[in-house]
Image (cartoon, rainbow, N blue to C red):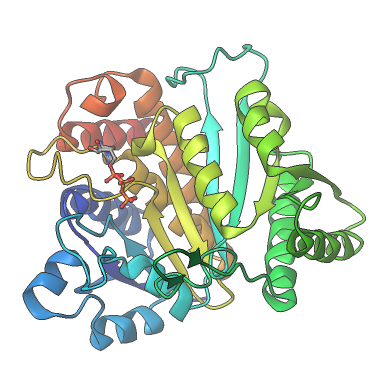
Length: 362
Ligand code: ATP
């Protein structure tokens, strides 16, 4: 059984290095205790690297990422550093396309003790996963849309091949959640099939995939209604799957429900590679102060352990993924070491220490 894993690490820009450092320390400790190896390989990339060298994602970093078992990526990009066409440096999007990471996994969990803007009934825990297609949709012409003096045009692309992979991934995830007692085994296709032919096509492919999974249930929802239900009855969802731009917007809404971007982890997963990174950006307004919230980064590390454990059938990693998530959620719920974005006054290191303390108890 494979027991040592190469992890390509992109520390990123702004608060990126500040939140990835304690995350790597925690992961390294878990690996020692769990008897497996995590070999972290630093990779240069990002806005600061572009400013210094003219390259945002060097070939050497891309090669390391391709050869690694998993990729851990912190926040990237800086509003002050841009390409000549005015767009921001975003190697994370380049990686998604180059490695065909079609499934953007955005878990939304609200557990007892967690601050949320919602007034939730006690008996309605929120635990669902939004899967955002991450390589096509309205991002297809990203960076090369047509703009004339009087018109601007971008093209939405939905392909049968990617949609089939995406929907299979969504149903497989619903089955795993059902088997581990986390959901009823239900997948919702979020679209706008009542208005756009492209989404009727998307939905038709979804329905075909649904027939392959008679042990699971499925339905459809329009994206506008879904935004409403995120707020009104988020406990009703299990697995949702949607187009790139719809998913981009809904995932920030999901982060808002959880109390903010600082607690929202994510993964971008393909057939052969996966990137794990927090949903938030590089927060340049607070960079260098030691007050960034590390929880989303640490939770992304937990998702990496889950994924490696499943992919390589390594129970120790899978168990540590569950433990690390439980410990981070316990640290958030206890509330004694919350950073400023969550209403507390803790530093990044104090928040990470709270996770370490909680790990000793789970
Ligand atoms: P991007 O477009 O690159 O995702 P963004 O424009 O959404 O970035 P962020 O960098 O995510 O912006 O920051 C948005 C706000 O959230 C900022 O005020 C920032 O300080 C805050 N923020 C983001 N991440 C964190 C964090 N981990 N800890 C504390 N505050 C954060």
